[in-house]
Image 1 (tube, helix red, strand yellow):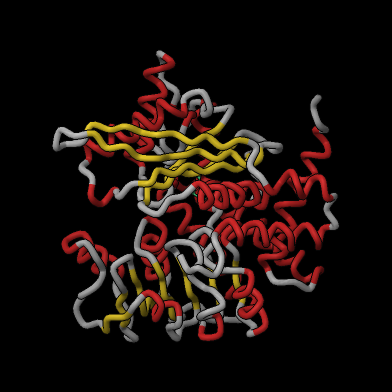
Image 2 (cartoon, rainbow, N blue to C red; image 1 turned 30 degrees about the vertical axis):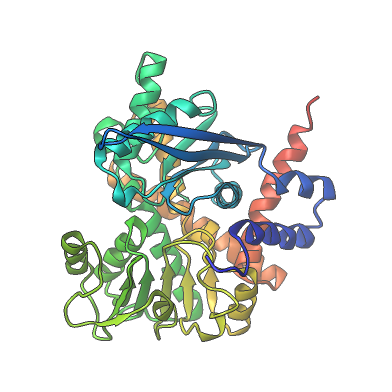
Length: 416
Ligand code: GLU
């Protein structure tokens, strides 16, 4: 993260922008600045070497006026309470933008999962879940995967929660493996949403998608699946990267082969026939569409002027600072903001939760059809508002999200 601004600074500045444009009551603005509840936990884990590891973790519940708290859990060495608070706030707006009945939350554990065994990760996850037991649940707060957590992590959460309850509760978590109640299409849903948004943005600016060039920062679940889908649709992937570094090939990359290389060597770097580039260079690559799908604070004051893409579709949460938003908008770049572009994940999570609660299992076609409808509707809502307000899409998305949450708060009233 750059020293320029923390993720929470960015989230609070964005809230200010929306509050001003909406003419939000100062009391509601004040309420929304802070999470409703934050739980800090210390997680003691038996390590494989016989010693004990002590990890700090948290779960931040931002606002739940529109429904139960919802949001992922992140395992990363740089996780902080402040970062998780920003991510929780973004979840609140995101769920409102796609109009699903949830509030926003996020969890984080400060650890390096790349250096931990599967057994250590399982014990960490179960212990963390046990510490959250009174705060999560199908009608209270529903976790999901985020950076460096996956379907297996969710299975351990579901099992731990269910063991304590004494019966199976699949609806307590989403992003689970299909064999235990996960939804078809959930794993690819965030990427599908990103691709749908990039496609809709391309339509609006008259960009031909066949052969359009794409650069993807991050080759985790979101980045890799987005590259795969884009490749299948005939877009040309010219650059990808991961935490180690990036690769560039103007002739185009086959993401499946790059994935195979990463599985064998641990990184996309050194994939044959490519020029090695840094993550910074990837962002500045000449391309039609740029998908930041890694971490926060990537497009900032420092590099916004050098971004060459026509469309930026944010797979990551918080990759762009408000200063950079303004610079990109002035350059005529269409930026589809995180709380819209990557909302496909939580939307499919909502579908999973509904399926669990009704004991149904939908086909992949049904999930993807419903996802397409939700994403296109949200995209058009945001675009229309941006046009009306003469603003960029981020401001419009924030106005839509914050506005809906504020509306719910007013309608509920304040107890006591
Ligand atoms: N972690 C994802 C996000 O940031 C998904 C959250 C969810 O499915 O609840 O949107």
